[in-house]
Image 1 (cartoon, rainbow, N blue to C red):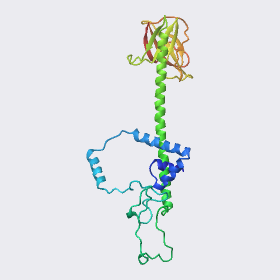
Image 2: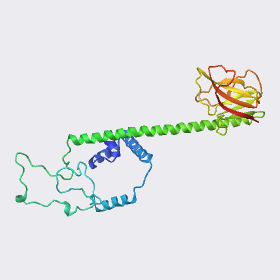
Image 3: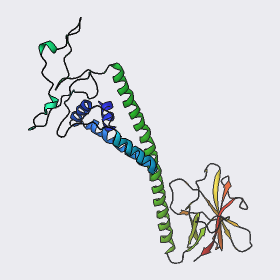
Image 4: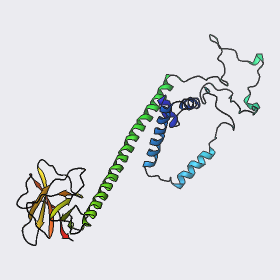
Length: 307
């Protein structure tokens, strides 16, 4: 019944099939979930692209053509009889069931025929009964069922593809949200550390664009430096290491210590320092190997100390 449910959600069924699905949905929670999923995916697909208004001339032409086209529909208060297919079967007088308390319109009653005017039954076969209330008209052959199955299959594929696109967009939004939350937590930790008495700090930005957002922060308290890797990319811990350097004036940079940046770790990291010292500037470089070189080779961030 899942194919019919998808077709019902896409308004692709015939009236009697719609009634069957509606009756089935009343007692099937699984099919109700399928219908809700299809409706959600189609709504998402419809709103995923920009909405454009058609040119006024095209809109007017469509409306004028619609006004000239005869509109056929059922009368007020009439309902479809389950099993009565609309638009299929042999041509003949239409039968509908009037709503309770309403008398049938005379035009809907087939005229009484005299015995002499009744058509002769075809030779070699019995006369086919005319379609009427409660009588199912001729069903479509295998080709009709195949067409409906193909339509339902295409709809399911569209739902799965659309659902995958929407799921990817939702996952991207969640990743952006998580990154924003992590960045806000980092800033909160930095500000909390800066509020402690006797603490000095330095915000390190790219040396090629000092006005850009900080890539890291160095916080020094009681002579112990800590690094907050705000925007530093994770390094390959097998053959790479970050090195924190201290600079004073024109003197050669001094290696303060090494550290690694790992995915998901955003808290301040203590940098093992071979000796205590105070510096006017700090810099961070990414080096090959696991030992600090005599001098930095690739500085990724630098900044002056502030109090």
